[in-house]
Length: 487
Image (cartoon, rainbow, N blue to C red):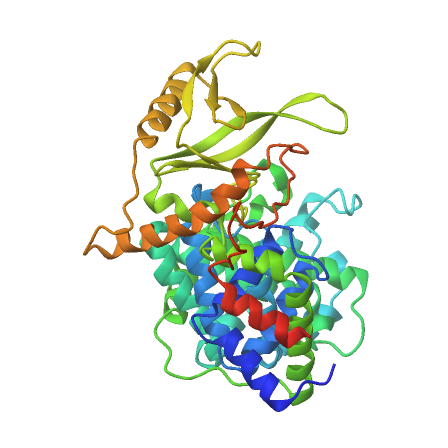
């Protein structure tokens, strides 16, 4: 597809201005599984290429980190799931860090790949012929090799690319706001889990070795990466891999040293990331993004309408109640009644329910005007409540009677919340909330008129209200421009 200079300029303006709003909405659509025509891995690589060329990748990384941290409920899951944000951070580190990692690890990597596995294996199940003394000697050699890799990394802080340092800075700042005790672990998870350790396990993909890596050499590198990952996480091995417990003392001693390294990486960086993207790569990435927007303009528009917060849990800040409930539904293909776990968010006078707490878009929205909510024993299950609207009855089940009573009380109270768009309010958060509610009311009309569900797997269209001319969604300018540019 040949784009004119005017079209290229206009498309770039749409994509990179206004806080990367359109690209964040596209990310939300990809992560929710709604987007078609691309995989999460492909989208991550293309977005990194495009934004590195425009010197905006560090900004997207910061926004994704902010979003991931803000909407993580359980700190044990922070950056642990294979989300689009994690894929983008991995792709970014690989795109800008290859030269750095080659210069940092090349010599030690060559040495490791020249060594025989029999001198480093510490798992008796892998080599039953090794006796206890040999295993102990192997553990010492493995620790010495790990120490060589670690020393190479610790000496490299001044040559670490600015883009990597900016990601570490964003992790330190954003994680520190909510989980201050996890700052170093978050940086270590990115720097080692997403960057250094993948390099060790697959050095041929980063240009660290010219030829392929043998099976024995890769096993040595895997063992080294296990130790380094434990140090970065600040954890020691337990019963799961008992053969690695011999490394525990070393891991404990190195944690403090590595924490200092992470905090140094997180210091403000005045250098700007370099643009390593060729003109041809930029053009290809732009055309792919335009093609994806054309295929997914409806989903991107929905994400923009939803406020482009990128996650269902994004509205927690102003929610009255939230949590998991079981929702009763009917599979229209089989006619069977099912109870399906849903993340439920009560905000002002609407109930939103999502397939998971990480979903970008709700499976359904229940406007609470003209509704009744009460406990019910009509479904053969305990702790059941009904939300009765003029169009249908929604049935949920809580884990306990007290939880059910809490939801009934909260929904009853939320029914009385009245929005006043004309009321003056000097509070910035309330102004933003009012804007969000106006967007939500547009989609509420849709939710109230689409009651047939395929176990909640309904993709709502955006019809116009009755007796009115079709009204564009709030993000109509962006969506319309994307349609026009895509031809």
